[in-house]
Length: 248
Figure 1 (cartoon, rainbow, N blue to C red):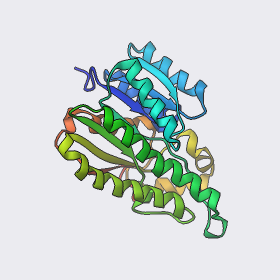
Figure 2: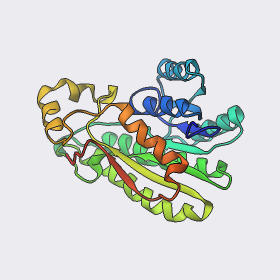
Figure 3: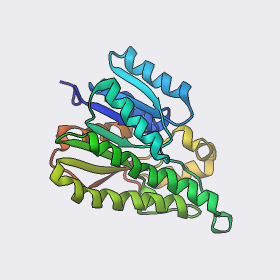
Figure 4: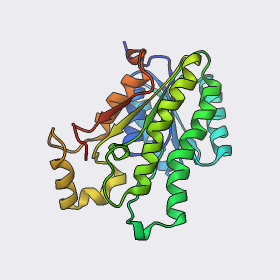
């Protein structure tokens, strides 16, 4: 039996990359999926069509996770489309490296507003619709615990995601809502095209990965299904590293 049969899931930032991979896998596992996007409507529609062509149900809903009014609309549309909510995947995020000398306020605000405030906005709205139980999966990064150089702001946001996950697990446990994080290592997506195109960086990243290759969205999606399903029903407040053993 599909592991997410009859569940309703919202996946933020799901028009491409890891988010798209998670949304498609959720659909294959029987979930009804809300594919959130900020600006890439065409990408979100492609993900929805893939889910539908495979026999699943999905809708695309635009929302900038850093804006509370957008998030309120996202979950209102979720309820309108499917009547309930069981799973939230906080995947929306931005990835930008800058040296200390290059860091400025717009860089800091943009990354924290989306990666941290956006996660909190979505979680606040989601738990209001999770009636009696639910599962939340936060997409973090190995950079949260082993940050590379020139990534202090990005890595700080992922460290915040890890701490928020542990704290909210204690708050939400009494409401039967589980919240866990997964931390990808070097994963080939549209978001790391520049890094992937740099042979030296790619060689470095793979050299730090015991399993000897870069990850792909499907690698991450399999773990997201586990954390969203009853298979992980006795797990909350944890962070699973999904990077082929990489500590970067």
